[in-house]
Image 1 (cartoon, helix red, strand yellow):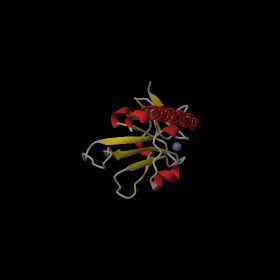
Image 2 (tube, rainbow, N blue to C red; image 1 turned 30 degrees about the vertical axis):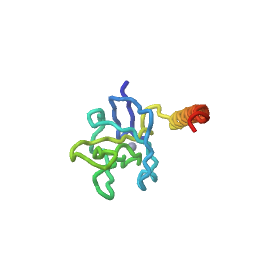
Image 3 (tube, rainbow, N blue to C red; image 1 turned 90 degrees about the vertical axis):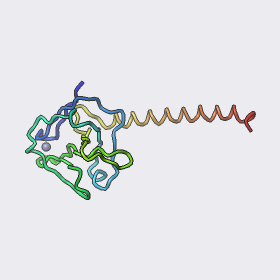
Image 4 (cartoon, rainbow, N blue to C red; image 1 turned 90 degrees about the horizontal axis):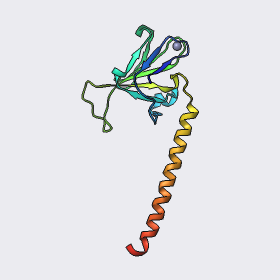
Length: 143
Ligand SMILES: [Zn+2]
C-alpha cells in the first residue's frame, strides 16, 4: 500500500511506493538531533513529489552533499536527498537515497513506533534469558 504524506500547510506532499520500515532512524548528527526527524529510507524511484519542487527550501551543511529539504511556509522538515553511503562511508558517486521524515506520513503516530521498539527490546531480553539458561545447562560438562 503506498504511503502518502505532507507537511503541515500542504505545500509539500508526496507518495511513496513502499512500506513503513520496521525501524525508523533517529539521526544523531547535530542538525537532525535539533530538528527531531524520524527517517524512513527509500530509493528515489519509490518517491514521488506530488506538489511543485519550487515549494521546497533546502539546507546544506558541512560536506554539502546532502540536500535537506523543508517547507519554507510551515517549517516542517520534509525529506533529505543524500548519497547512498555504505555503512563504511563509501559511495559509488551516483546512487542516491531519500530519507523521508516519517512524522509527515498520513496517520503516523510516533507513539506506535516507540511501542514497536519497546516490544523488540522485550524480545531481546527473552533471547538473552534463553541464552543464559542454555549456558547454565552447558556449564557443568563444558568446564
Ligand atoms: Zn508546509
